[in-house]
Image (tube, rainbow, N blue to C red):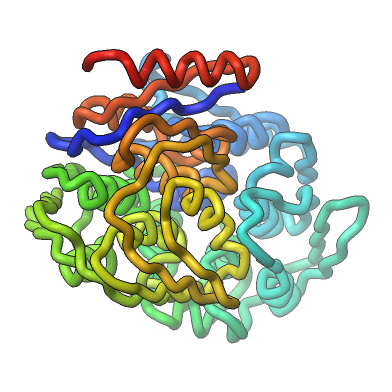
Length: 439
């Protein structure tokens, strides 16, 4: 089983380039199959979730090609050959964004059947708001054999108010409504950058969507889509992860190919903690030279602090001089990493949806287990900041959403290796060898 071995203590220094946003890409790939002409998608992240999704659309008959086989970041998709409207395989059940295929297939074909979604176990993520939206548009929705089915004679635009702000429901309803008759209004819509990115891609294909990025999105349905060429926005969570890695290791990192505005909530908290941040046109430079100050963090829908960055900033706060509070308002199981961080010396007490973090002088290396994608990345950051060697197990979670993670860390001076460990004895031997090695 593959694991990360990390030797901590090196400040991360240098430049790192951020890839395309995974969360944007998944919605855009679903939208792409709604077109019977060839669309081109650029800046596609080459991560496990994306490859699983592409295999799923291939399995139902969509044509997926890489114009340059050596470039995994540009893909063309043509949905004219889709032969079935049911998507069910062992792979698609493992990723959360499988539900975007429901909105895409319902919008295009007026029927869909998709395996109920999986993904990281970070808490309850019901799809009731998705179902509410599809029903409002005129579809029947039912669950059978572990799959969600939808069917409609026709889809008609409606005024839909989401009971809670949901990125997934906003995108899914937007996909279906873009091919419905008349106008659909989504109120209390999610404002995240990847909602805007998906809307912009749909508009390039001929959709009529206005208001994406606000809490009210208006969609006038169209009969068909046309070819388009779109570049996915940079991944704000990957960028934020490297920002926190720079701060935790007292480094100096310039994070390139980003949209600084998308990072404002992260930058604001890191500045409160004593980091120096310089915003450039398409980059941010993060410098940390002194011990961090404590602060409070509360996760909120965009433009608030992102839930996907909660564990990474908690790693930084655990090294601050004082007590910090982190409140999780989105997912109830997002603190599972705290037990692992405690193994490294952190002082964290969780009560309900709040973590009380008392800063410690340092982390010490330990064997820890990644409980989910973002928490796994956070444990890597802790390992980079720790004294001694750290082993992070279950790294398949991290590989779901970070491309070339270890290579990018090494380019900044971090000491990290991905190894295939057979047993505990083998792991301990490798950790001793890394501990004694001179770098």
